[in-house]
Image (tube, rainbow, N blue to C red; front, top):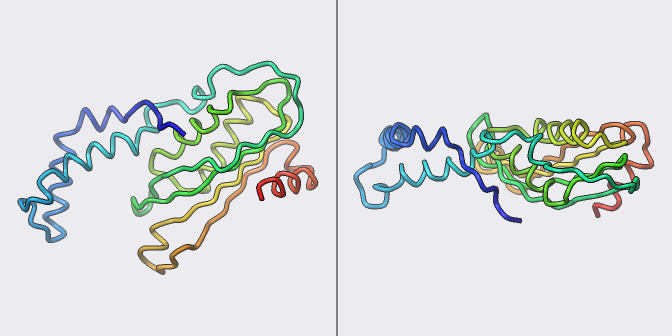
Length: 195
């Protein structure tokens, strides 16, 4: 999957100030900010922020782009969309996979647009529960399908690398809209096809 094509322009506009703050954080944690390995770190962190926080620059409803009239009304699944995000509680990374199922009601989007939607939603400070709901809500609003189901798997560094230190633990969240909410058989079909 290609990365998204835009960056966080607010970071770019505030580059000098962000670099100063990163340098100060390094100093406050006990680092020698003048040692060779850290001289370019503030600039590197700022460039990274342009990318990993680029989701603030796009309207997620717009990324689905042009939709197509299509009479297919059977289950469509886009699975294993890999994402990377930053926990808003600790600013620590979390990452995993998003799985989307929907029942079109005469309107479909290009398959790559689903990956783009995941990128836009996850490339900002987030929590996994919100990611899951936002994807489902936006697909429901824009495509107006008969139903949507989203399952998100995540591994959170704030839980694996600090605190309880439970490396490899997974968090799984789901959101269901429309037909998926009412029909247990449809939910089961979606979940069985993910395996």
